[in-house]
Image 1 (tube, helix red, strand yellow):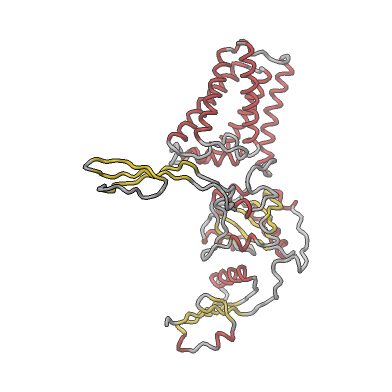
Image 2 (tube, rainbow, N blue to C red):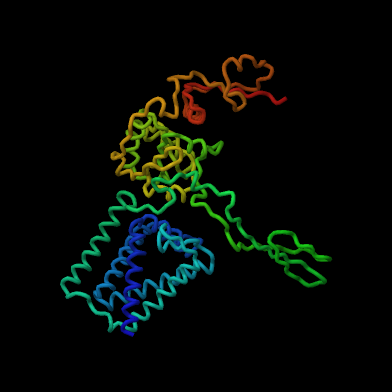
Length: 443
């Protein structure tokens, strides 16, 4: 029993330290997972959502510290009771997620290792058994050092955990396990190989045959049932097939998907704000000088947010920003960079730099030569003529018969006009300063 307890002690202690440290490296990411658990669709305790970050830091620090305590044999009764309480709670949580199919990834190992709900539950059951062995065999757990050195190690582990969690919250995770890490190409991460495994779906068809309901299982084809009356069909995913690392990344305007267009840019700076209203005001104030300097040096600058058009326009007006903000899923923006706002820089779709708004002054931007720039444009392209939504020249406009024109809009210096011009200039790499829109009669 003595040797079994020691093996369990080392295994549990090391696993708690590794699991805790991975989450300690990204407490903000773990807080997003807790918010998912607290939501009305899962545990239905939304009143805890505002405290998710504080709970996240508390849990991950405790996880690391308990692992250290167990390995050095510090306050064994307290440690084992706390370990038992934590694993019972996590076992319940993972079972609930797995059985009711609520949360697809428990977040036990952050973004470093993705586990399915049933894999997470199995892992927690094994840990529960090991901790119960430790609980029964407490008498075999002895301190590895004398009281004073043990206490110092315990205190240092606690101080280090608190400092490290604060450090990564004020900057970015020290180790980036996500698909948007520096060096990754977003197009490659989104691509599905031609020979990739296809999803396998099982179809269960219900027919009424001779007055009785019968089920027929196929891989998708409609079953040929003589004299059968179709009632219902249910589908079950047997194998999801190949799933790319990035699935939902988009850069969208109100009119179109501009993802491919922007990912082809040679030097693109993206300001990520998952929610404009929740953005740090101090960070937003820093954006003005940084983005103006970037545009001056030849970089293409855009924003990315899940907020609505009104919020994005208000942001642009309030902080006098010289770039447009496009639409992207909130969860994706949160995943890209753990800051609100945060910066990431792309070179033809490859992430070359990322920064928390606190570190925005540390980003060094070189002056791009004319050949390096995406836009080699005139200072003023004059008036844009938009004929039925298509950019045209003044000459083309003059060739149109007055009888064919339904309406002509001459946009003056208004917010609507500027928004339309910004969109046209961004998409077409132009510098139009005024706009005339012509609507033609239908033939």
